[in-house]
Length: 243
Length: 305
Image 1 (cartoon, each protein chain N blue to C red):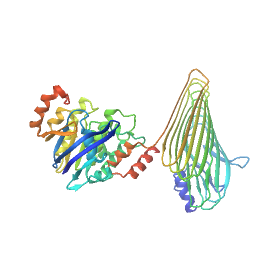
Image 2: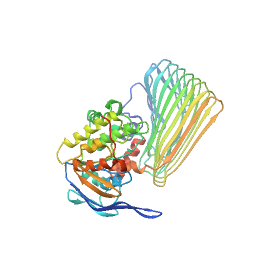
Image 3: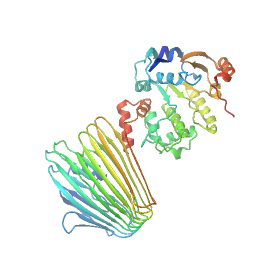
Image 4: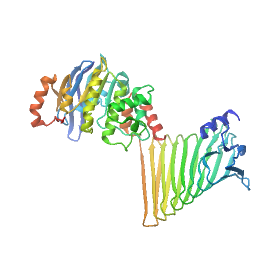
């Protein structure tokens, strides 16, 4: 279980301190599919980075399975079972897709197993498994490789920062089924996704709305979705995808 | 063959024993094993300063191993090896030099290799440098490569120096005739107080000749690297040179790409980039459970692969 207690995060600017996260507290039960949504610039990605340990909160505490992990490094949190998929995946010269999947799984995987992860995100595995994760891959390809990598981690909780960004509509349906499968694959596996997509919100057990650095609403999709959709005209943060 | 020699042969030429086919093994200044085949003749040069390797025209899918081992501290030598590769050949030449210096005197091997590559011939040249031993004596290697490429020939040079060489100055000069192509991939890592300098002068003299000279290097601790790559376009040709370097600790790197077009249809490009490992690359690997140090090692290992 993940718990945030009064977490704030600020950065110094010329005009003074800017608060990006303001006193956020919540608990996330295991085996839940939670979607964080809200307007751009509201602090969603920062929140995911704070949970993964990439950013340190200015104040407040983070607990993981009852243990205070506020001072734990990215590595320690990863080893404790927190996985994080980047919004903009990183490129590496010389490191192949197979290398990354191998590193992610933490043990020796066969080429066949690596290919299975790639196939699940809609990539023709044999074309990609030996390719370098470098500038020759498009944004969409990198994004799918990123998702395959975190799937290989099989962590207790996985954070996805806007997984739909850069993915074409054809692959989008596949992506939804990937998330459903991750959700159903076993007990005590949690998924936390930052998304603006109505169809991702639709498969959520729970939705959290983050706006202006604060948790402004939380509930089941039946409770929250109508509220958000009624406001889309003004805030425009939800996108509908054609079937 | 003693254990040190065996270990060095494994490092520089991936040899676990006597190679198949043609070879010449040089140890501490003299040839300790040699074999010629019907297609590949290896002989001592008339001036006794090295060997001549003659590969018969049309020889396909054959290899030649010519490793050099120096395990005697203080040995310094200059060796001239000449390669004559006949027309229409397709061969691999595996050179490589390892110095084990357990003493206090400098050991040095300067290998001057000259290649004459026949028409339509294809050559892969692999050269690995390696140093070991805990003596205070320096391990020095100064390779010089001179390449003359006939029409429509192809040469791929793959050079690696990852560990243990204190000082190296590499000079490569190539002349390309019509349709000839040269591809160079240099991989280099320096650490401690090591110095490594590389100079390439590639003359695209013939129509439709082409060259691609790529260097990937990592400089750590207090080491120094210099990479000078000059492409000269004397005809309608294409040339590309790239230096991509990771700098760490207190190392220093100098990259000097130079293009000279002496023909209006010479298309020449250079790229050079020096920088630290990107922070986001380290963070990404940390999110997979690697420590910062493990992430750095992984990134360097991939970069130099």
